Image (cartoon, helix red, strand yellow):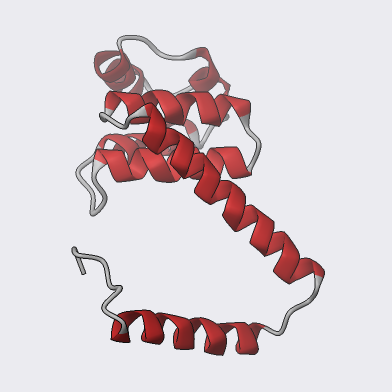
Length: 133
């Protein structure tokens, strides 16, 4: 288990030490809390909404019920609507679908990169760039 200082910090932050955090073996427990705290709760380049949507997408793609529940609750806490959550799951599903298609057919990576670059160049030329670009 983590050091007393880390246990105290977890309790202060989350209101208790979740049982699953007690499962983290030494010497990784203090470090694991630091990663959780700094990436999920800390001030980073991504907003809390963005981090939560990334988490939901990754969790659903991995088919992890634990992570899906956690990150959906994180997203709701960050103000993400159910419609946005559904769309994030759909984007993750689409990504996984096309990844399977590409890998299963052993599509040439260099060709894929060239075609993708050409497509995004065309989208930019057509004025399809996002407003926050």
